[in-house]
Every structure is written in structure tokens, then in C-alpha cells.
Length: 142
Image (cartoon, rainbow, N blue to C red; front, side):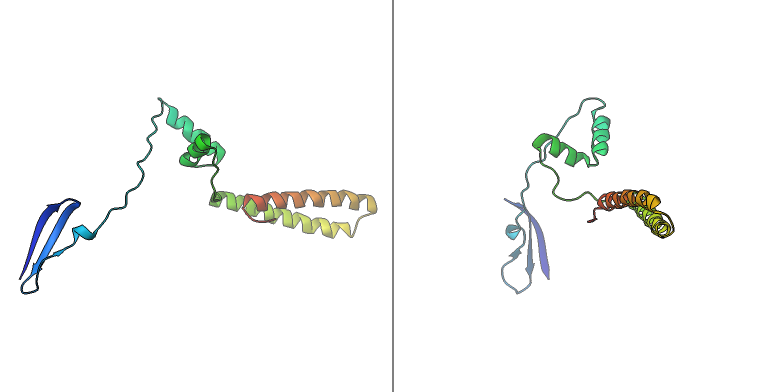
């Protein structure tokens, strides 16, 4: 037989369990300790302030919390912001089109005269710049 009683102690609720012929009851609640965390900070915004804050945070490419922390403490986020899948798709398309255009230009270079080759080299430089920007947008090394 067992006897389970609910007993209030200093640290909260204690359950004492006693089984027949096994000795004194075991106490579970006395050994548990709760982790204390810092109290949260509450921010009351004026009427319409939340929409304005959300718009500013979205324009900065940050979460509401990251925007407030950066504005209040001057601390930037230590981790990179994740790139949304729509942006990944767009950057991927830009990279693919730039690679296709580069292949066409390299093919044309062998068939044109020197003045056109100089112009095509400048065009290739622009394509390399586009590729670099797209890679940086994806958070990768160019």
C-alpha cells in the first residue's frame, strides 16, 4: 500500500510517498530548485507606435527585439539574419542568369574584333560584380 499526501512546504508543493514496510517517506519537492531569471522589461508604446516600430524594424531587416536592442544599447546582433527563401530564389536566379550571360560573352569574344572584345571585358566585369553582390546577399563568400 502507498500513502500519497500533498503537503505545502517552503519551496512549493511537496509530495510525500510512503510505501508499506519501506521506511520513512521520500520527499521530492525539497530537492528541486527553480532557476531564477531576470525580470522582463516592459515597453509601453504610444497609440500607433507598434505599427511604426514594426515598419522600422522590417525596413532595417531586423526583428522587433533586435531593432530595440540595437537602438537602445548600440549592440548589433552577433548572428547573421537568416535569408528568406524568396530572397534565396531571387539571388539564385540572378546568379544563374549572370553565369549564362558570361558564357555567351566568352563565346562571342572569340568571334569579334579587338574593339568589341574590350567592351565585352567591361561587360564581364559588370557580370562579376553582379555575381559578387548576389553571393553576399546569400551570406556566402564571393
